[in-house]
Image (cartoon, rainbow, N blue to C red; front, side, top):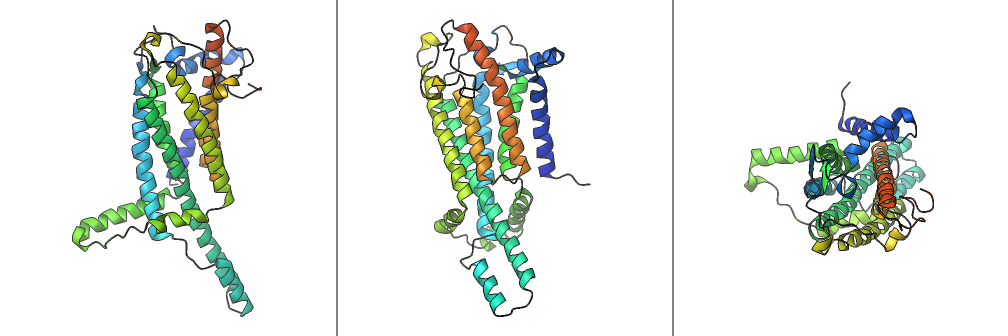
Length: 338
């Protein structure tokens, strides 16, 4: 049996989720496993300065977002071009043509309806994928900007090498997961275009006219689910930007390079890791915008939640131990709950 991209991605996400869930079980039986996984996940302030074995500088976060921007941009452009060329939204109405065929006694009514519906569903699926990649592009571009201009990582801040490779995996696999449902056909289309260019040469290739409205207009025909998902995404996106700005401002002065202070403002009023909470909201928005029918995107969301809840719990413990007057009403990541 041939294993495709979707199956590989789902297996990879499950392989990432299960160890976190096992490590989160409050049992002495799993305490050593919990400690081992926590050692891989620690970074920055919660990593002991003496624990530099198998670590890299935390400023290597930049690598995640360079990879994410290049890869997501490539997927977005190729998928968008494929959608425009191969599955454009026509101006004709499916339902009108079907009803007209029925009223005039046209033959093969049900088969025509099934074929047309399938075609319409395929169009929505591809253009919905373009929409998801467009949202992801907004996220990774902002994260790249913040890594360069907002955060001032301490020279002593480190992260485990496995955490580093996990980040590279995530920002490669997450954008691909958003388009995995149509990735094979998109990549086949891209390869055909490259082969045609090689065979025919540049002079014999058809001239591509950039019909900007033709590229954008199909996105306006998406369903309300996509726009509600986008609103959830933007809500989390804005709050994460605010929380990152607060964290970045704590280290604006060099005298704080090796010191930590309690952050205040925005969602810090409720939780210790509001930037993690905002990340969960962001991926919840992507999940909602996808329509919730793709298991792969559910697994991406599951990995984000499991990973960030696990990390937030340790961050909460660090804050409480570090600061005697740390606000006791703050939860780790879920306001009023956890």
